[in-house]
Image (cartoon, rainbow, N blue to C red; front, top):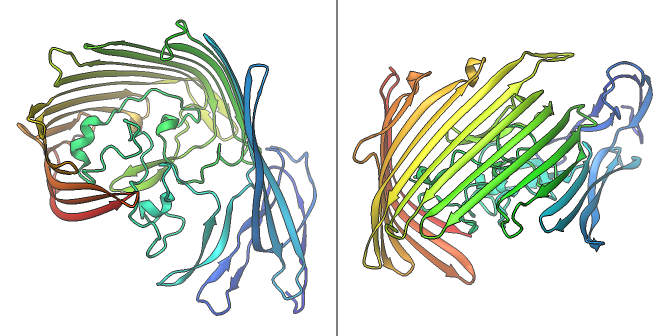
Amino acid sequence: MPPGAEEVRFRALAAGDYVVDVASALGWIGNDVQWRDWHTVKRAGKNVQDQSNMGWISFRYGFPTGTVLYGMNFEAKLLGFEAWGELARNTSYFRYPSESGERLATDSDAFFLNVYRDMGRWDLGFEYTNIPSDFSTTFQALMQNPRQNVVAPFELVDDNDDWDEWPDRWEQERDFASLNLTPAPGSGLGFGVFPGLDVDNDGVRDNVWYNGGNRILTYYDQPFVFGDDFNNNGVVDGWENDNRADYPDDQDNRGGHGFVTFRPREDQDNSWVRIGRYDMRQPGGGGSDQTSYVKANYLEQWPGLGRVQAGYYGKRARDNIRNDLYRFVGGSYAVLPDRLLSRNSLQHTLVAGVHVNTDALPGLNFYSDILVEVNDQRELHEADFYQADGRITTVGYVARADYAWHLGENFTFGPMFKGVVNRTRAELSSLKAHSYTLTPIFRADYRLAPKTVLRGGILGLPFREMHRDLLRPFLDRDSWYYIFLLENLGNYRGIDVSTSIGFERYFDRLVSSHRVSSGAERYYIRLRIG
């Protein structure tokens, strides 16, 4: 660029589903970093597949200098309806990087609206959301820490799926974190991300006291969960973790959802039938999610005996929006691609479970749960994709039983057993599964003081945990694991403090493989504040 330039304009002939980005690599004076300000300046308004929108577009380049986020929300009641919503505007400021460079600004608006009415046995609901692809609450800023200066995103809206006082990117301490300060202000604090893992809804991850010893508390894990999966990626939305800012919906999503619910018994909130329609579009990405569904739930409880629960979910889905999975795999979080198994499908899901806990044997708990899921994939022809008729069928079963003896008020001990069977039939071998796991456990707790507990657990007693994979025998293993720790819970000036001193050891023997078996032991002292 010539010296003294104050403004740069570009002009281009564009057609189709275009997107234009600009970027520069400017050295930051006095620091050992470069500021790379890659950002989008123009894109097609629709997913145009031909050249019918051909025309000249123009845009200016500006270096990002600031972001302002402001908005309003509302709540209202009218004619028996409840309504609530929010409107937010993001204004981004730019300037050509010179002393007298021209300034410019861009605006992007996002909003959502919810309307609901409860009519006793019936209720109606509708929601609409629009979050454009260029709406953002992130600003690239120069960050300083003890090791180096870095250009990193400053988040005005954080990713905080566990709803505590620390952003998830601080707690997880992983390489994928958008900003890995050293040390982070909240590094190691909080209890980490646990959507779906706080079954008792007390705000604390259910397996926190074992911390790494979750092999013991896998007894409590429920592999079959009944609930909405509006993005059709195979994970119930309420149990899905992500690595994105907590917006009401994903970026580049515009559309609505309406439903009608009927309760056969007005006094029973856990038994109902719901019919709904979900229609979401991506103006920028060009994808769409159009799903019609019927959902039913039934729950019956008998005090002193137990309960029975069943749920059915049937849906007709046409969804080609990619919603990648964010899962804990191999000791760390990873982003796994959405395989888009519901591009054109008729799906049926049935989950049923029984919990027995009687007055005659109050220390005994027995759980039995079954899952049957059928995905009838219909033939589909798209410009760059073909799907043949096919069927993916999954059947799963889990049985759990535990018994607890109490000696006095302080000592509790007892055996636990869990068996899991999972089988999936499909045309693609990568989707097939056929395995079972048998897990015997013995666990004991001794309360030394009101807030001090000695805990212990052994997995693999009286026989080793057995995992057998009938399709991939190289994954067969026999395992044992034990953990002992002393835990103290306290409160200092209103802040909960947990101190654990422990020892754990495990061993995995690979029974059908030439790979080396593995084992390890660990001693640790851990302090948690939250």
